[in-house]
Length: 298
Image (tube, rainbow, N blue to C red; front, side, top):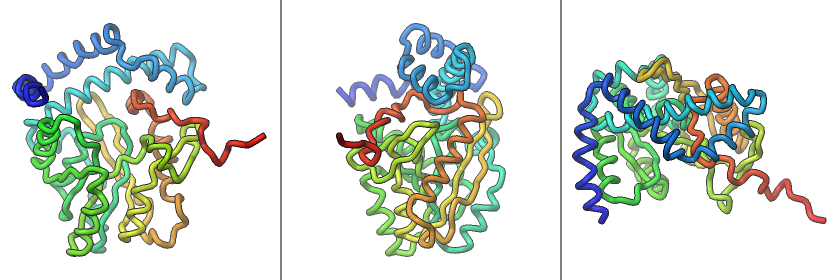
Protein backbone atom coordinates (compact mmCIF):
# COMPACT_ATOMS: atom_id res chain seq x y z
CA UNK A 1 0.00 0.00 0.00
CA UNK A 2 2.84 2.40 0.76
CA UNK A 3 4.30 1.87 -2.70
CA UNK A 4 0.89 2.35 -4.32
CA UNK A 5 0.37 5.58 -2.38
CA UNK A 6 3.76 6.83 -3.56
CA UNK A 7 3.05 5.89 -7.20
CA UNK A 8 -0.28 7.71 -7.12
CA UNK A 9 0.85 10.84 -5.31
CA UNK A 10 4.36 11.43 -6.65
CA UNK A 11 3.35 12.45 -10.25
CA UNK A 12 0.93 15.02 -8.81
CA UNK A 13 3.60 16.48 -6.53
CA UNK A 14 6.09 16.68 -9.39
CA UNK A 15 3.64 18.51 -11.68
CA UNK A 16 2.74 20.93 -8.90
CA UNK A 17 6.44 21.62 -8.26
CA UNK A 18 6.83 22.75 -11.88
CA UNK A 19 4.20 25.47 -11.57
CA UNK A 20 5.37 29.10 -11.35
CA UNK A 21 5.12 30.70 -7.93
CA UNK A 22 2.22 32.90 -9.03
CA UNK A 23 0.07 29.81 -9.62
CA UNK A 24 1.48 27.98 -6.61
CA UNK A 25 0.27 30.67 -4.25
CA UNK A 26 -3.17 30.68 -5.85
CA UNK A 27 -3.23 26.97 -5.15
CA UNK A 28 -2.10 27.69 -1.60
CA UNK A 29 -5.08 30.02 -1.15
CA UNK A 30 -7.42 27.20 -2.17
CA UNK A 31 -5.69 24.76 0.18
CA UNK A 32 -5.97 27.32 2.98
CA UNK A 33 -9.75 27.55 2.54
CA UNK A 34 -10.17 23.79 2.87
CA UNK A 35 -7.63 23.34 5.68
CA UNK A 36 -8.93 26.20 7.80
CA UNK A 37 -12.69 26.29 7.13
CA UNK A 38 -13.57 22.73 6.06
CA UNK A 39 -11.03 20.31 7.54
CA UNK A 40 -10.28 22.63 10.49
CA UNK A 41 -6.87 20.97 10.86
CA UNK A 42 -5.82 21.03 14.53
CA UNK A 43 -7.66 24.32 14.96
CA UNK A 44 -8.56 23.60 18.59
CA UNK A 45 -4.91 22.91 19.49
CA UNK A 46 -3.66 25.98 17.67
CA UNK A 47 -6.22 28.20 19.37
CA UNK A 48 -5.31 26.80 22.79
CA UNK A 49 -1.61 27.35 22.15
CA UNK A 50 -2.12 30.93 21.05
CA UNK A 51 -4.38 31.79 23.99
CA UNK A 52 -2.06 30.27 26.59
CA UNK A 53 1.21 31.71 25.26
CA UNK A 54 0.05 35.11 24.00
CA UNK A 55 -2.34 36.28 26.76
CA UNK A 56 -1.54 39.93 26.07
CA UNK A 57 -3.41 39.76 22.75
CA UNK A 58 -7.18 40.27 22.49
CA UNK A 59 -9.42 37.52 21.07
CA UNK A 60 -9.78 39.42 17.81
CA UNK A 61 -6.00 39.85 17.53
CA UNK A 62 -5.47 36.15 18.22
CA UNK A 63 -7.99 35.29 15.52
CA UNK A 64 -6.05 37.38 13.02
CA UNK A 65 -2.80 35.64 14.03
CA UNK A 66 -4.52 32.26 13.75
CA UNK A 67 -5.72 32.89 10.19
CA UNK A 68 -2.35 34.30 9.12
CA UNK A 69 -0.67 31.24 10.58
CA UNK A 70 -2.80 28.83 8.56
CA UNK A 71 -2.21 30.83 5.40
CA UNK A 72 1.53 30.67 6.06
CA UNK A 73 1.33 26.94 6.85
CA UNK A 74 -0.25 26.29 3.45
CA UNK A 75 2.40 28.44 1.74
CA UNK A 76 5.06 26.42 3.54
CA UNK A 77 3.53 23.15 2.33
CA UNK A 78 3.49 24.43 -1.26
CA UNK A 79 7.08 25.66 -0.96
CA UNK A 80 8.16 22.23 0.28
CA UNK A 81 6.72 20.70 -2.89
CA UNK A 82 8.42 23.36 -5.01
CA UNK A 83 11.76 22.28 -3.54
CA UNK A 84 11.52 19.19 -5.75
CA UNK A 85 12.35 21.24 -8.83
CA UNK A 86 13.44 24.72 -7.74
CA UNK A 87 16.80 25.86 -9.09
CA UNK A 88 19.74 26.91 -6.93
CA UNK A 89 19.50 30.41 -8.41
CA UNK A 90 15.82 30.74 -7.58
CA UNK A 91 16.09 29.47 -4.01
CA UNK A 92 19.08 31.75 -3.38
CA UNK A 93 16.97 34.70 -4.50
CA UNK A 94 14.10 33.74 -2.22
CA UNK A 95 16.06 32.61 0.84
CA UNK A 96 18.79 35.14 1.55
CA UNK A 97 21.52 34.74 4.17
CA UNK A 98 22.49 38.17 5.48
CA UNK A 99 25.85 37.35 7.09
CA UNK A 100 27.40 34.26 5.52
CA UNK A 101 30.81 35.64 6.46
CA UNK A 102 30.13 34.58 10.07
CA UNK A 103 29.92 30.92 9.02
CA UNK A 104 32.91 31.27 6.71
CA UNK A 105 34.96 32.71 9.58
CA UNK A 106 33.95 29.81 11.84
CA UNK A 107 34.95 27.32 9.15
CA UNK A 108 38.47 28.74 9.30
CA UNK A 109 38.69 27.51 12.90
CA UNK A 110 38.53 23.91 11.60
CA UNK A 111 35.82 22.95 14.07
CA UNK A 112 32.45 21.49 13.15
CA UNK A 113 29.41 23.72 13.59
CA UNK A 114 26.05 23.04 15.24
CA UNK A 115 23.30 25.28 13.89
CA UNK A 116 20.27 25.58 16.17
CA UNK A 117 17.07 26.85 14.61
CA UNK A 118 13.34 26.78 15.27
CA UNK A 119 10.28 25.74 13.28
CA UNK A 120 9.69 29.31 12.24
CA UNK A 121 9.11 30.96 8.85
CA UNK A 122 10.86 28.69 6.29
CA UNK A 123 12.96 26.01 7.94
CA UNK A 124 12.67 23.96 4.72
CA UNK A 125 14.84 26.22 2.55
CA UNK A 126 17.68 26.42 5.07
CA UNK A 127 19.17 23.54 3.06
CA UNK A 128 20.30 26.11 0.48
CA UNK A 129 23.08 27.05 2.93
CA UNK A 130 25.05 24.10 1.59
CA UNK A 131 25.58 25.98 -1.68
CA UNK A 132 27.69 28.57 0.16
CA UNK A 133 29.80 26.62 2.67
CA UNK A 134 32.77 24.27 2.51
CA UNK A 135 31.84 21.90 5.33
CA UNK A 136 29.52 18.98 4.63
CA UNK A 137 25.95 19.72 5.66
CA UNK A 138 23.73 17.43 7.73
CA UNK A 139 20.13 17.94 8.80
CA UNK A 140 18.66 15.92 11.65
CA UNK A 141 15.08 14.87 10.92
CA UNK A 142 12.35 12.43 11.94
CA UNK A 143 12.11 9.52 9.53
CA UNK A 144 8.93 9.34 7.41
CA UNK A 145 6.90 6.17 7.88
CA UNK A 146 6.49 5.63 4.15
CA UNK A 147 10.00 4.53 3.00
CA UNK A 148 9.39 5.70 -0.58
CA UNK A 149 8.54 9.24 0.46
CA UNK A 150 11.39 9.13 2.96
CA UNK A 151 13.81 8.31 0.16
CA UNK A 152 12.28 11.08 -1.97
CA UNK A 153 12.87 13.64 0.77
CA UNK A 154 16.48 12.49 1.11
CA UNK A 155 17.04 12.86 -2.64
CA UNK A 156 15.54 16.33 -2.65
CA UNK A 157 17.94 17.43 0.09
CA UNK A 158 20.87 15.92 -1.79
CA UNK A 159 20.11 18.30 -4.66
CA UNK A 160 21.37 21.00 -2.30
CA UNK A 161 24.25 18.90 -0.92
CA UNK A 162 22.42 18.28 2.36
CA UNK A 163 22.49 14.84 3.94
CA UNK A 164 19.55 13.86 6.12
CA UNK A 165 20.25 11.81 9.21
CA UNK A 166 17.67 10.52 11.65
CA UNK A 167 17.92 11.17 15.36
CA UNK A 168 19.19 7.62 15.82
CA UNK A 169 21.87 8.16 13.16
CA UNK A 170 23.07 11.46 14.57
CA UNK A 171 25.58 10.32 17.20
CA UNK A 172 27.10 7.51 15.05
CA UNK A 173 27.44 9.91 12.11
CA UNK A 174 29.15 12.62 14.15
CA UNK A 175 31.40 10.05 15.82
CA UNK A 176 32.46 8.62 12.47
CA UNK A 177 33.08 12.06 10.99
CA UNK A 178 35.08 13.07 14.04
CA UNK A 179 37.27 9.96 13.83
CA UNK A 180 37.92 10.67 10.14
CA UNK A 181 38.48 14.42 10.69
CA UNK A 182 35.48 15.26 8.50
CA UNK A 183 34.19 18.72 9.38
CA UNK A 184 30.44 19.17 9.24
CA UNK A 185 27.62 21.62 9.74
CA UNK A 186 24.80 19.96 11.66
CA UNK A 187 21.33 21.46 11.67
CA UNK A 188 19.20 21.00 14.80
CA UNK A 189 15.57 22.16 15.03
CA UNK A 190 15.62 22.22 18.82
CA UNK A 191 12.41 24.02 19.73
CA UNK A 192 9.98 21.08 19.77
CA UNK A 193 8.97 18.76 22.60
CA UNK A 194 11.11 15.72 23.54
CA UNK A 195 9.70 12.54 25.03
CA UNK A 196 9.01 13.29 28.66
CA UNK A 197 10.86 10.19 29.88
CA UNK A 198 14.00 11.45 28.14
CA UNK A 199 13.73 15.05 29.33
CA UNK A 200 16.84 16.25 31.16
CA UNK A 201 16.03 19.93 31.34
CA UNK A 202 12.89 22.02 31.78
CA UNK A 203 12.50 25.69 30.97
CA UNK A 204 9.78 28.33 30.75
CA UNK A 205 8.98 28.77 27.07
CA UNK A 206 6.53 31.58 26.31
CA UNK A 207 5.55 31.52 29.96
CA UNK A 208 4.93 27.76 30.23
CA UNK A 209 7.31 25.29 31.91
CA UNK A 210 8.14 22.53 29.40
CA UNK A 211 10.83 19.91 28.73
CA UNK A 212 13.34 20.99 26.09
CA UNK A 213 15.78 19.31 23.75
CA UNK A 214 19.37 19.50 24.93
CA UNK A 215 20.92 17.20 22.32
CA UNK A 216 22.46 19.96 20.23
CA UNK A 217 24.24 21.46 23.24
CA UNK A 218 25.42 18.12 24.61
CA UNK A 219 26.75 16.95 21.23
CA UNK A 220 28.45 20.29 20.65
CA UNK A 221 30.27 19.88 23.98
CA UNK A 222 31.13 16.25 23.36
CA UNK A 223 32.66 16.96 19.95
CA UNK A 224 33.82 20.55 20.60
CA UNK A 225 31.65 22.26 17.99
CA UNK A 226 30.90 25.95 17.63
CA UNK A 227 27.20 26.66 18.15
CA UNK A 228 25.21 29.14 16.05
CA UNK A 229 21.60 30.32 16.11
CA UNK A 230 19.87 30.88 12.78
CA UNK A 231 17.05 33.40 12.86
CA UNK A 232 14.76 33.34 9.82
CA UNK A 233 12.44 36.21 8.98
CA UNK A 234 9.64 36.20 6.41
CA UNK A 235 10.02 39.34 4.32
CA UNK A 236 7.00 38.76 2.11
CA UNK A 237 5.22 35.84 0.51
CA UNK A 238 7.85 33.45 -0.83
CA UNK A 239 10.84 35.48 0.40
CA UNK A 240 12.89 34.95 3.56
CA UNK A 241 15.93 36.43 5.24
CA UNK A 242 18.18 34.41 7.55
CA UNK A 243 20.76 35.77 9.98
CA UNK A 244 23.38 33.87 12.00
CA UNK A 245 24.25 34.64 15.61
CA UNK A 246 26.98 32.90 17.61
CA UNK A 247 25.57 31.13 20.66
CA UNK A 248 28.85 29.69 21.93
CA UNK A 249 32.41 28.89 20.87
CA UNK A 250 34.43 27.53 23.77
CA UNK A 251 31.48 25.28 24.57
CA UNK A 252 33.16 23.04 27.14
CA UNK A 253 33.69 26.05 29.41
CA UNK A 254 29.99 26.94 29.48
CA UNK A 255 27.71 25.55 32.22
CA UNK A 256 25.25 22.87 31.13
CA UNK A 257 21.97 24.09 29.62
CA UNK A 258 23.10 27.70 29.34
CA UNK A 259 23.39 27.39 25.55
CA UNK A 260 19.97 25.76 25.30
CA UNK A 261 18.39 28.43 27.51
CA UNK A 262 19.90 31.20 25.40
CA UNK A 263 18.60 29.51 22.26
CA UNK A 264 15.06 29.32 23.65
CA UNK A 265 15.16 32.99 24.66
CA UNK A 266 16.07 33.94 21.08
CA UNK A 267 13.28 31.74 19.73
CA UNK A 268 10.81 33.46 22.06
CA UNK A 269 11.92 36.86 20.78
CA UNK A 270 11.58 35.61 17.22
CA UNK A 271 8.02 34.38 17.84
CA UNK A 272 6.89 37.53 19.61
CA UNK A 273 8.06 39.66 16.68
CA UNK A 274 5.60 37.92 14.34
CA UNK A 275 3.80 34.97 15.98
CA UNK A 276 1.91 33.98 12.84
CA UNK A 277 5.02 32.35 11.36
CA UNK A 278 5.63 29.84 14.17
CA UNK A 279 4.64 26.17 13.87
CA UNK A 280 1.62 26.28 16.19
CA UNK A 281 0.10 22.94 15.12
CA UNK A 282 2.81 21.01 16.94
CA UNK A 283 1.86 20.08 20.51
CA UNK A 284 4.85 21.87 21.98
CA UNK A 285 3.25 22.37 25.38
CA UNK A 286 1.67 18.92 25.85
CA UNK A 287 3.86 18.18 28.88
CA UNK A 288 3.15 21.46 30.63
CA UNK A 289 2.81 21.05 34.37
CA UNK A 290 4.50 17.64 34.42
CA UNK A 291 7.93 18.77 35.56
CA UNK A 292 8.86 16.32 38.35
CA UNK A 293 11.21 18.90 39.84
CA UNK A 294 8.29 21.25 40.50
CA UNK A 295 5.84 18.66 41.86
CA UNK A 296 5.41 18.50 45.59
CA UNK A 297 4.24 15.65 47.74
CA UNK A 298 1.69 15.93 50.51
